Image 1 (spheres, rainbow, N blue to C red):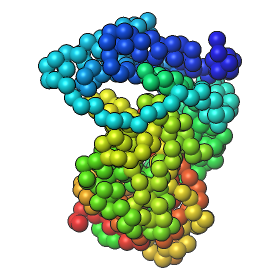
Image 2 (cartoon, rainbow, N blue to C red):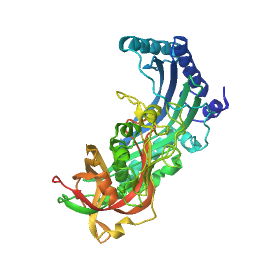
Image 3 (cartoon, rainbow, N blue to C red):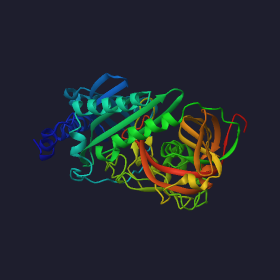
Image 4 (cartoon, helix red, strand yellow):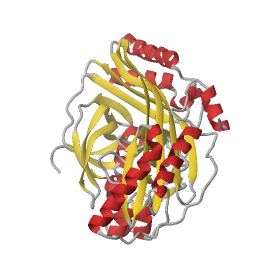
Length: 467
């Protein structure tokens, strides 16, 4: 057993597979592909061992433990590639052969396909960055999470309301092996909390995720969420109009969540579409706005390499408000002529592609963003966002939970959720102050994905059905 496996097994949270088994399965899959005649082969194993405590009103209603993994091998014959995945590690020595047979069948049916000249990657040692595995998160067992949930529900009950949410921790693993000699493994802890409090018609929401439980500050988050829900009662409708708006950290993060749709990937650059291909260096946001994909950031869910074994590097997306660079995987790097940045991703029902998975907006120094708003609006979070026009970066969606009118720099009457359609670049261009507090939220359907952002003050944000 490796030293890494021993350290993982010693704590209350264990890795689902462990370094030795994970790498052994990947090596076996690659070896079977090469033995079957594959020209190239690679494999990765992604695993997760998680415990969740879900609660509602006055009880923990769904304690849940999840242990899962997927082993996937890619084989290439005459430029045609096939992938096979399994959850049966005993089958590792056979799935490479199956992938090779399918790739060969494609080559026979459709002929040779010139291979892309992908950048060479090199083997590296295990990634044992101490910031990835935090003992406070590993020790957050079922009893401790249940106690935290009960304290949160009691806090909401004392205010006359109810709390709904989930507290959880997880061990995430990734192992990658290629025929070119890459062999990497890393594992990381994850602490996550999500909470909605309802009091009358007032609601408030909080979400945060980090490698360290200590960063989440559950007690303070519960007190603040209850207080905001209490203040949010007796909502009135929001008249259509254009407002100076303070977007909370979760709302800012939601605006940035779809940034890959606006051309910040190697595929978009190769196809000549989107911001990086068509608007490089253009000032599209306030000069104080810095947005990057930063897999080494201390906040959120940092991770050292991607599914292809490429070291993940920081990629500036918006640098001092200007369109900067795009994230790539090996294929899109080869197509676009950009360097590999370590952002390969594979999701269900999607072809492999590059994804910004560690979106990070730098915080500012302004402590009280409301102070600069004479008459406006505070929006805690946004939801049901959909891209209307990727060229103009326009989204549509709605506000939700603790939304308040702002008068003379202070929260005034709570308002009901309202719809909006806005350009993300347009809103970021009108940012004139950035808060210091950062909240991180998971990216839906992105492995280990996370967006971390501060609150921002935006001048002239339109709410209402008319556009």
